[in-house]
Amino acid sequence: MLGKARWSVLVAVVAALSFGSMAQADVPPALGENASALNAMAQTWPVLQSAAQSYGQLAPYAAATWAGPGPRKQTLYGYWEQCHNTRWDSVTQNLVTGGLDIAGDAEAEAYAIQAVAMDYPQQLSEYLVQLVQSGNPQGNALANQIMAQKGPLLSALNSLTTLLNTTGEQLGNAMGPNSTLQPLPISHWQAGIGDAPNLSAVQYIPGPNNGAPIGWASFVPANSIYARLQDICPTGTASLPRIPLKGQVMQAANQAIADEPDLAQMVQPLGTGSTWTVPAIDDGFYPEMNTQVRQQLVAALASDETGIAGYMAPITQSLLQYNQEVQVIQKEIAAAQGTEG
Image (cartoon, rainbow, N blue to C red):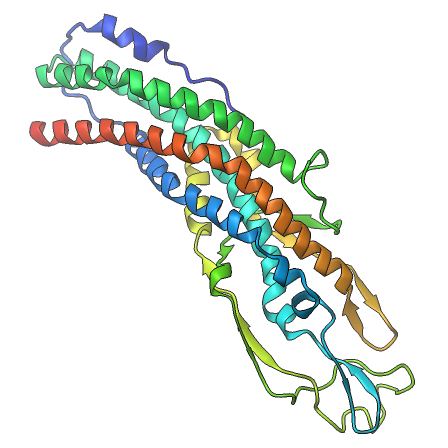
């Protein structure tokens, strides 16, 4: 994904502890921005992983009740009429977008974590050079404090970047032609950054059978006076609350692009969000979604998200460890700045 961090400047700082006439060093703004972004991503990544894991439990939503064609109702005149599946119309189709959102979020976040995690020590090394050249005894003391954290920081970074190299490739390939995941039964789709569905909060409240029928028997013209003598199709309302992740992931992605502009070509397309289409069939009177395809689609996404959660799992602990080391250094810098101000 990205090259190795260049630590030569940071390592050389210890040997460069000479004092000049510069004023007290200013903390580079990017140092705090990176630390803040890392702290946010350390919270977001486990939520994404959990969302992918819960998405793997989607078997009930792939059933005919949720993603099938909807019920057929018989009128008083003996005609069979095809009704909409109100569950699909109001909830299940959003599950598909949500599944693609999780994949897009994970890919963007993986790029962002690596870019920001590797830019932080670069900014830190520049700050250390300023500290040791400042001629300020307190700056020298702070530099030595930070250098004492070098070992744990390096160790945590090495562990994290090794895992991220693998995960980034896996997440990128998961949505590509070389994927080992179950292929999606549609040809037009794009994973992107978006909010994840909160599957534990899905609600469906059935309504009365007073909806207008949608389809007609082949021998009953759509303009027949008998066609709408009854409103017999079931109605209902459904809700699918979202886990608000889009803003957090976009913020991390923007910070990553600021640190590593070359990432823009990979991350920015994800910012347009997830899109997909399902092929439709037409019986001559009304268009109907290919219900077999949409049932397969929900089932495939459920299977694939289980794999994506598996890719994400190794990162969580290493990210938390690296973030912890970064935040320790930031607290030391903040404390020193406070005493010097």
